[in-house]
Image 1 (cartoon, rainbow, N blue to C red):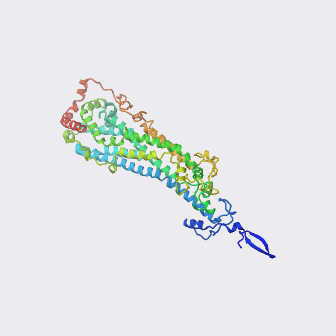
Image 2: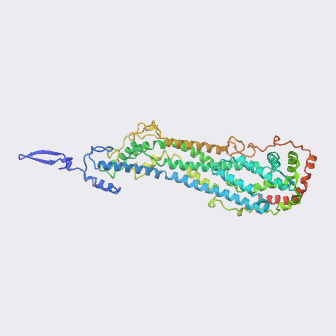
Image 3: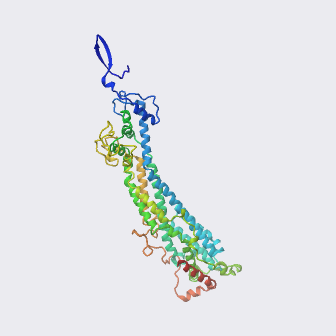
Length: 557
């Protein structure tokens, strides 16, 4: 007779008969448990056919049981694995949201830049021909720096754009004055007049405002999608504590040991276990929600005043307008530069004989918008941002609601409608303890999970800090500020109003400055006298300029 079966000794006709106790005759079979245990992929060699004494159990109630020590160990590891998978499954939506939307936005933005550069190149080859091709590196460098900024390069957008216009002025000044030879020092002097003379009209000022705030918003937004993706991926990979593993085992598989493999945990019981196991994740929620709110604000900017698509699509036309402004004002610009920088030396005879019409190609035709390449996957920024906003809104409070989402899973609990016939941690009955609040400090009295509230998870705290830093960047981007360069200039900072920085209220660096070069006498006769050398070149350009200006006007209609 097995040692674990007690006996009752009864006298009968002088003989001692050993009979099983009546209670043990009714000892429950472990057949259901064996089937459920085998269905998990475990070997049945160690599982008893009937309940045995449970003094050996370390987690489950030490009553008659269908579990051996080996079974309890294996089921404990199984509960840990299932919990990790449940968290990953439940957070799948938020993780895929950031992964897929980051990919879409990044593809869109890169393709937008490529298309803008191609559009400008095509238009300028048609408009200016060889003249553009000989100076195309100025424009190529502009797009290279814009791409480098977007990918996280240490680029000050304002300084880069100022440098672009200064270089363009140097090149054009030589082209509108081919009868002179200009040294490097002289050209450096010329570039100092970019701000003072405004040779390109108001285009540089407006374009700098638009490009700066749009690129800041776009780059910060895609960085936010990156941070959200990384935080979601990291937080969804949980490492349960020993106390959590014990609680998971007790909730999920102690019913097996009690011979009740089909009885699922009570819903409230599950909530307390999950709130204890995911206490640190719940503490992420406050900073996560602030981060999502900041992302939504920047998304609104991208749909409105900071729309990168509306800035980059017509950038070729805007730069062409600036070039024509320079051509139209070449006589006045040349006169003031000659007065401030000195009279340049005449060019060699061969070069001075070259006429201006050979340099400027008058064949200008409006650029048909239908010829522009379509942006990423044929979509538009507005549709893309609207889709991202909808998904972001759904991801709010995802970490604090994680326990509720898991415990609503019918594979996990008996549900809220079956509170009497569920596993409460000891038996099949109602779960009585109250439900804990969210977060680490509220688990001090958690009846199911031992939680050390004095030791916050350092890994989760790192994610909270990453979200806090990103939220600060997003708030700066919302106001048009680049967090890396916001102290270098107020040009792109914008206002804090809902519509962003407007042209009529934005501070500007393009005011008339007299500290860089000698003051210019406004007397008309002196201007005309100083411009005599440039007059011949300018007159030859006049008919070309008229054609270009008229064509541009038609384009804007």
